[in-house]
Amino acid sequence: MSQAPLIEHIGGENAVRALVETFYDLMESLPEGAHLRLLHERGQGMNNARSEQFAFMCGFLGGRRYYAERHGHMNLREIHAHVPVRHEDAENWLICMDRALSDCGHSGPEVDRLRGALRRAALRLVNDLGEWGVRPESAPV
Image (cartoon, rainbow, N blue to C red; front, side, top):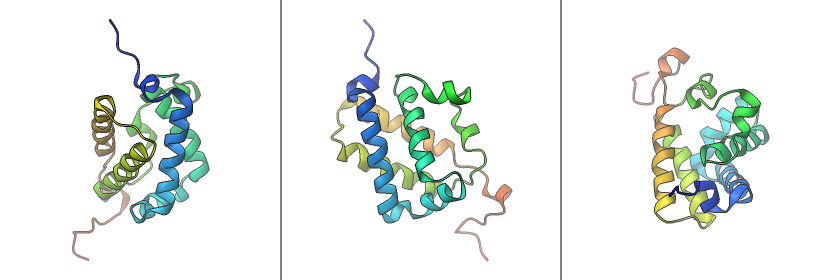
């Protein structure tokens, strides 16, 4: 017996859209989102990020792979290769996503597994800031 994809468990594409919108609303309003907003503004902006996040999350949750259809892959490290991601950024992203999941009423063992998968994915994006000419906060000036 196969288990239903997580996208079905959380309510389908409409629920993914609500999650993404809630996530970005939180990112735009919480202090933890301040540096994340800056990174998005240096890129293609928050509206584009909302659209791309929805496309990615549908596939990530076991639904239609809109992101891969559009871009040919779903490799998170490649997607974020142009972005200097600090450990603090990954943690702040997770804070916003955890709050969005809670605010949208998602809970249970499947969502706990999702939180674990999101944590592993976010932490995998932390990269070598020295390559970007970015000094870690703990380094002396």
